Image (tube, rainbow, N blue to C red; front, side, top):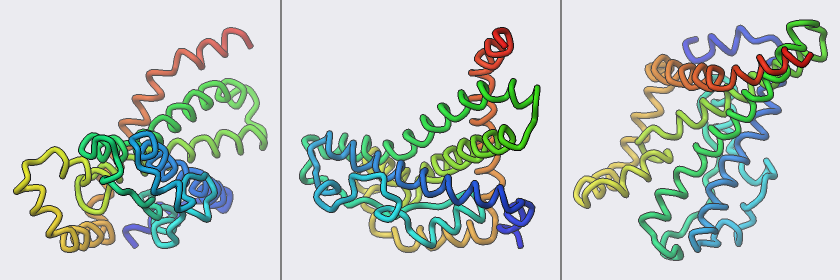
Length: 225
């Protein structure tokens, strides 16, 4: 029940909000990978029809369900060909970081919208404003969780690709050779819930930082109401 405990506490509206947001967030993450790869000279994702925000092109069923249940998951990776990039080493680093950074940027936009909506919600917590605020909250939370999870430097996550480009050849080759075993170890840690606490702590810290950095917006809205 470890990985399901938080999910079981959600009401049906929160579950529906999570599903809708996952169908928005996962395509954004993978589109960002493909778009940056294209800017670096690799059009493989574009040629494969993956340079799109259509959820059907990007959603991995198992990864999406895990994201729904635990807050941490993944999408179907876009195809990348480093040989086509103008500068493969830098290209892989920026392409790998593009997904998590796009989610953090989307989360920041979501927090700004929360700051705008909150004064109205606080003054009159009706069903419409409650729904909007709940949707924004989960939009922010899922974007941050997806970014944090994918930055773990373990294959096949984005963080591992960045790490392999930064490590000396010998260590990078070891990581590549042992991808299968490292991936298996990662999924076991996820399923037994070992990673939930540190990942949730970091995700909450980022959310609180975004709220703190944008609280002046809510104050400004209250002043003009």
